[in-house]
Image (cartoon, rainbow, N blue to C red; front, side, top):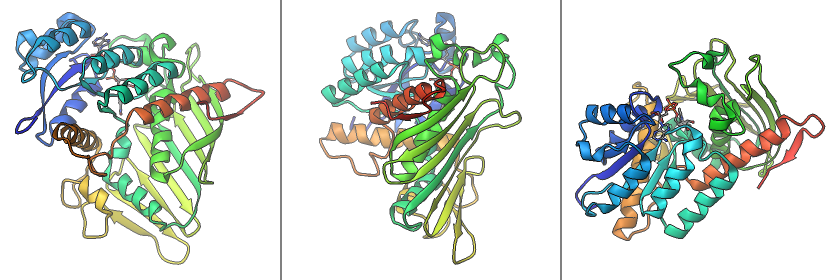
Length: 388
Ligand SMILES: NC(=O)c1ccc[n+]([C@@H]2O[C@H](COP(=O)([O-])OP(=O)(O)OC[C@H]3O[C@@H](n4cnc5c(N)ncnc54)[C@H](O)[C@@H]3O)[C@@H](O)[C@H]2O)c1
């Protein structure tokens, strides 16, 4: 890996997909990674046309991921991919991830990590056994402003944390658009492809993860409620929870895809003994601070010396240029690739390099889904201990 880019393969992410293109933008941003191969679609024709449009050689564009892993292994080490990014619907996360780890490839995978908790635990075991790196793209914890917020809370600027409100509201599933073709609402609202949960797995996991990352505390118990507001939808499109954290904080989480008119409104507010901090991804460069004994403040990414070192490390531009969704994917990829290089060089990765979500976040994400489903559809026992 010395003096060369890391070689990336992909499963999913063809011209028929949403998030794969964002992954590529993020992965390439810091000139550390290049795309060398992929099975880009469940449809071999789309895989081929997509690969050609990314200027890949025909013999590195595959019809199935099984074929991809087998063929890549036959290539000399100097040519084959180093890691695979998996951006398929949830049902097709586990098998390619396990095949990759078994063949010595590092993995980047989108959330939720797998279809079931059991699968996630198997991946954890395999990562521990192989020593390979698995990064999970819970992208909202990649924003520099979020990292600043986390650092301030850890430094005690708010005093002991009491209360967190975290929400992720979208409106795009307000109608049953999954019955129309040409969108990716179909698999998201089908339990056979999405898993036990709909909205709470798709975006509720982001809200839960953001809260644990920012607080530095873990949920121990929750009271959950899940609803399918849109008639005949077989899976939740809205969820709410009260949360108890191991450091004593209490939270409210709202996650909804039927908040008509909302886009990607993920935001978090945290309150301690001395004041509060707020961040909204639709205005990503600002952290709002509210104090008991002084006027409100706005901390701006890219400005001056006052941002936490970890926030500066993950920012790229001077103040006023928004650093958003794609840059946050780039932060995960940059930190992941630095960690992979550290392993190859036989050195210990630094704290900054290791700052990305891993298989352990993935397992906890599946535990969050399991606990929410247990509480959310259970009218006699709404409070549930965290399911391990
Ligand atoms: N981190 C985030 O912010 C974020 C945002 C969107 C989606 N996601 C996650 O990313 C994943 C993909 O979501 P999406 O919105 O891009 O879905 P999508 O339906 O738009 O795209 C899925 C892609 O996977 C391909 N595919 C399906 N089965 C395949 C197989 N067996 N082999 C190869 N390719 C296959 C499809 O052809 C398509 O190219 C999901 O797990 C989703 O939860 C995460």
